[in-house]
Image (cartoon, rainbow, N blue to C red):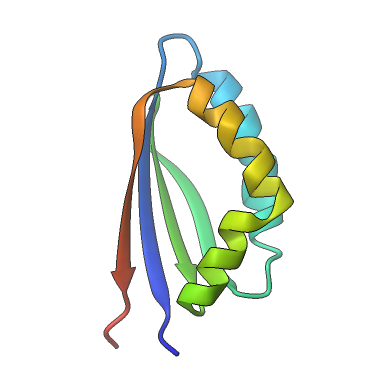
Length: 95
């Protein structure tokens, strides 16, 4: 069983930055409580450009995260407030 890292990048629609932040805060708090989560950080590379840096104990733990209520409820709302798609990069940890 190998840890997996995830980088998720998204851009807020004009004027929607603060709404996104209000959705992200409880999402981050709940995700950090998941047993398979190692870390889950929300960063802002520039105003309205968000980067999530995540690590899970296994691919199965990431799959569980993606099915949890706090994620499945927040994600459709987030999609309404962003430009384009969320860019997700999965990175299996080597060592």
